Structure formats: C-alpha cells, structure tokens
Image (tube, rainbow, N blue to C red; front, side):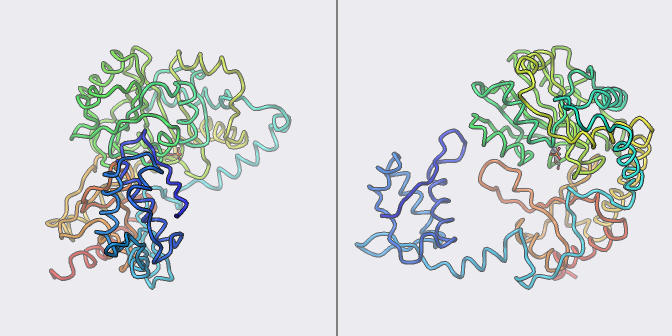
Length: 467
Ligand SMILES: Cc1ncc(COP(=O)(O)O)c(C=O)c1O
C-alpha cells in the first residue's frame, strides 16, 4: 500500500474529504503516485486516516469525476495517466511561463507595484550614506527591539495628523512585514481564544493565522465591509479587518459599522486588528480617520506599512499595541529581536524629519489619483457596458467584474495572450473558490499611457468576438 501521510487538519473550515481529494490530486499530478498505481481500499484508508468510509468515498468520487483516478471493475481504484491534465493545468495556471508559448508580459497590473519614476531614490541613497557616516557608533550597539526611538516618535506624529491614530511612541513596534508582526501579535494574544478575519481577505494574513494552529472563522462581507452580525455568531475574540479599503473589494467601512465593531470588541473583551495598509490613498471625499482613533477602550491594534506608500522592498511595517498587550510584550523583555535594519530605520527617520516623506506622499497621492482616473476612464471608454468596477474610491487597485461569460482563470489566461497580466480574486477566499468572473487590477506600477494601452488590449482579449 502507498505510504499515505496527508496532514489532515481538523482546525480549519475545509472538509476532510476535500483535503484527502486534494492530497491525492497533487500526488498524482506530481507523479509521486504514478499512473496505474492502485489506490488503497476505502476500508484500509479510512482506518489508516481515522476517518469514516463515507469521507473516503466522497474524496474518491471527486477524483473519479475529475479524471485523476480510474475505476477497474472488481479490482479497485487506480491513479490515472494525467499527462494531458498536467499540460492543461500548466496552461491555465496563474503562473504563466515563457516555455508555454504565451507571449511575454508587457503590462503588469500587479497590486504590489509602486511607481518607480517618482520614487526619490537619489534622496534615499544620499540619506542612507549620510546615516552610515553620522551614526557610526550606533552600528556597534544593540538595536531597540521595538524600533529606533526617534523613528517611532516621528511616525507617531505623522499617524496622528494624517490618520487620526492616537498613541505614544512607546506603543509602536516595528517589524519586517505584516506577516511577521501578526505572528508576534499572536504570541502576545495567545492561541487559546478564537480568531476571525474578513472573507475574502488578505491571503498572507490567512496563511499566517492558519499556520499558527488557531481556530479561525471566516466572516462574509456586505457592502459596508465585514458583517458584524455574522461575527457575533462566532466565538472569536480577535478579528482582522481592512476598514479603510477592504482588501480586495475596496469598500470603505462607514462610521456606523466601525462603531458596531468597537462595541463587539468591548462586549467580548476582544481585539480588532486594523490593517491600514493603504490608508494614505483616498480619491473621493474626505479621508476617513483610522478606527484606532475612535477606540476609547483600548481594543484596536493598528497595523501600518511602508510597502504601499513607500517601497515594498524595504520591509518596514509596524503595529501599535494597546496598553494591555504592550504590558505582555514588555514582560517578555527583549526575547523578540527587531527585524528591520537599523540603517533603514534611521534613514527613514531622517527622510521623514526633513520633509521628504510629506513631499513624497503628496506627489504620489496626486499621481495615483490621476492613474486611477485614467484606469476608470479607459475601462468605461472601451468596455463600459460589459464590466463593473468595484472599489474605486481609494487604494492602489480595483476589482473588475467582466460580463463576457468567462471565469476568472480564463480571463487571466486570455489577457496573458495579449501580454497583459491581471490577477485572481479567488485567491483571497478562504473557502473552495466560488465562481468568479472578476479580476484584480493594480495600477501603481503602470503609467497613464500604459494603462490606456493595456485596457485596449484587455478589451480585445475579452470582447474581440463582439467587435
Ligand atoms: C491587505 C494588505 N495588508 C498589508 C500589506 C503589506 O504587507 P507588508 O507590510 O508585509 O509588506 C499588503 C500588501 O500587499 C496588503 O495587501
């Protein structure tokens, strides 16, 4: 019998039969189980995995239906020859490679790209060099585990004035990215109580919650953001949300919903993790202050990052701990080392203090606003009747619903044939992918002209037959 070691997880929302089916599918596709190999009988596998025979039956049915296994009368189930499926899967995959004769990408709508042309690289380099010379003694001393104090003071002032965040520099903890900070936060909150996150939501946060062996509830959205009535039905005490610009759908949580959430956290004695990843960008109406500033009961943990408004590669993010969690953090002493380079921190401090941060922000706000306008105008001009734009009031991306009958994978694949890279939305759903005719379009890294050219190509890719 095959050595079966699928790592079945009982602490996640995915049914066991799906987990077993997915395990076999991957093994067969990767040829770890070769074509013609007999799969274990229902009885043996059920005993081996300590699950019901019904669960195995459902998993095997799925493999049969999708052609990954074949049934031989009176003999059992055998792994199918999937050479065709492998080709098909590769061609339809989101990771399109040159080998597959798909044209190289000319226009990349990645939501993670920022505009390199206006990035103040010369200033950043100069300040980095200055820092190296003027802080010589500091390169040989220990770093502050929370982040260099002068940077925390500078950030504290900026956050108060621009995002309405109320804190002291002592509450700020820097870290190399949102995932790391979330990990650190989980160490402080603990793993006994349940967690929740918006669904769809940021996949990297989901991955971190899942890998921390937590019990996680995934809460649906409505047009105002996370659905508080559904959250109330769970036992969660900590919830992760993106209220300024829901990721990926982009809705801005109105005040009433924010207050409802704060009340939920008060009643539960719980916490709200507010990820304000691109709160700097708001194109319509007045900026909405961060939820953290509304919180009078120390229930919000504010997460911010320099990845969107500055540069993703510097890996500089931060969280603001409410007093109770700060106390736990301090009690642990210096066990958690700082993960952001002192050089980058001090460079950022001078960059902010000398006014460059402010200038950079106002420049990119104007620039991204123009890009977003160009994107929406181009979509409306070329395919307005057949598409719907979702979440266009802020941020660096939109979601586009394409009404041509194609599913997400096909939309991505046909766009790639025209050298345009667009991104899936299904990735952000916790449950098995729903049918989506939507894709994610980030506009930070393309010029207005490139945006126009790319949308014209997308129109050809998706609606050519209607011309
Ligand atoms: C929802 C969300 N949060 C946070 C981040 C930033 O992550 P990091 O701070 O690790 O760069 C991103 C970047 O894409 C994001 O989309």
